[in-house]
Image 1 (cartoon, rainbow, N blue to C red):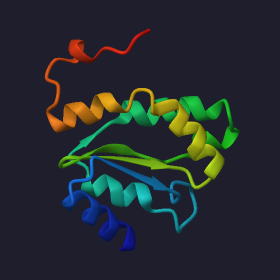
Image 2 (cartoon, rainbow, N blue to C red; image 1 turned 180 degrees about the horizontal axis):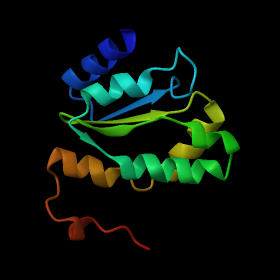
Image 3 (cartoon, rainbow, N blue to C red; image 1 turned 180 degrees about the vertical axis):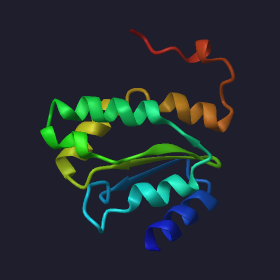
Length: 119
């Protein structure tokens, strides 16, 4: 219940980006994805797949990640693993592009062509 209460509090405070760490594995105690999923209005499975694809080159255990991401009201939630090293690697992977969905959620851009990332 603490996860739900914390996420709901952050959503109600209109935090643009909410990152969780841990609770994404296969143990009975790992329930962060289930809680997060119930709060999402619009899941972003493409991000989940991209993170797992990126991470599987770093660790064979990445394929077991059940992490989810998506939009809950005006907040973008991303579940990440409990390993600090994995979190750092994933952040380095997603930070160069995370501004784009945050702008979309905030209504700061309406045409994705306006916000193209340099290739």
